[in-house]
Image 1 (cartoon, rainbow, N blue to C red):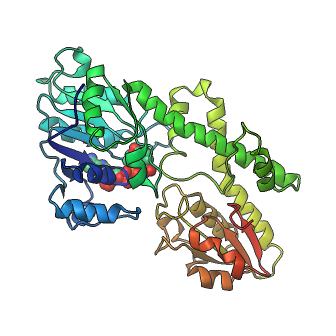
Image 2: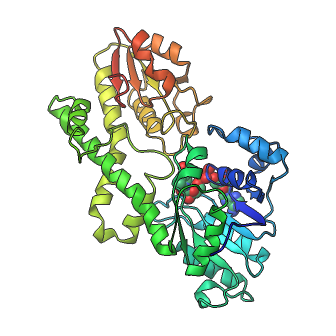
Image 3: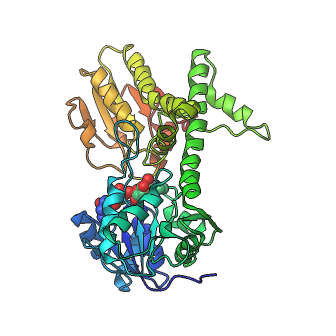
Length: 418
Ligand SMILES: NC(=O)c1ccc[n+]([C@@H]2O[C@H](COP(=O)([O-])OP(=O)(O)OC[C@H]3O[C@@H](n4cnc5c(N)ncnc54)[C@H](O)[C@@H]3O)[C@@H](O)[C@H]2O)c1
């Protein structure tokens, strides 16, 4: 069995996944070069700073940079191993946009030497890791790729999906079990040597396609379960039953664990990854497609409820609390809260809408076109509103119910003020 990886490692993409991975390796003695196409990211990391909010990451980055273990650059260097952690969004037709992964593979290809390891961490549809082997092979016919045969491959290629939770990345990066799927068993072994440097969880070796599919399935499972809760919320609302109470009671059954309804599903993963399965086998995945549709419909439902509440006032002011996709992080990607606010602003152009989020300092571009929207402190927004909508249960918002909400119409989409 291979031991722990030693040598120089390049991480392509210094975002929410790449930078924490770079840091946990660097602080354990690996010589890490972070590569990013965004010059501001490279400059920030070079200064020892983090260009986004993630608990405990800033201290770790400044320490790793100060120790000289972590550097950042825009040029892909020569290294012993490469980790690809670039975005994998979806196209208009919900198929995966693999252009970032392909570009990263092409950046790496000219630098490769026999014995190098290439790990794809980006969430990807089954077959992507194999495509990386093909893309590299096309540029480097001098190197023997894993698909050329098990014996004697020059380059070891594997997929190691990431399943950390934003807000807890620095803990979960160490403690989560890791799935490492190789194009061959030897590829999986070689790639696992990297994760042995820091992983405290178990490292599970498999083939690349199973690893790719396992990651997608994890998020599809979450999405279907959230859709169930959201559908329950709709049904309960129509029957004038408190969905939170129903879920609380049902969850006392020893084998029932219903998730919480909310204003929709956001972030980089859960609203995206199930589509990679649905687009790979459309005729065979009606449940996952429907779950996506149920969850995508949620922001519209929430906005419609707010519009109905506003109709009770002659000239109401609405406060919307929260813009990020989940509590206590600054990540606004695919945020249903932003969609809700945009839908309300569009439906009620004459109504003043005060938006507040302790993690967001400027209105996101998607909302900048509405003249009836203003970013405010929570205190000011709530003080001046007739209707208060809780969209994200950030810690500072939770306590508002004790002090400031008296006499106002409230709409708690997260069940945080119950
Ligand atoms: N954020 C999460 O919580 C999370 C969790 C699990 C899996 N993932 C997956 O991990 C992957 C990365 O996600 P993320 O959240 O870190 O994305 P991100 O957008 O935060 O970071 C990606 C980084 O890659 C850089 N980049 C893009 N193309 C590049 C290239 N050719 N060379 C160098 N840098 C390049 C971007 O500038 C950006 O800084 C995605 O596939 C995502 O689905 C993310």
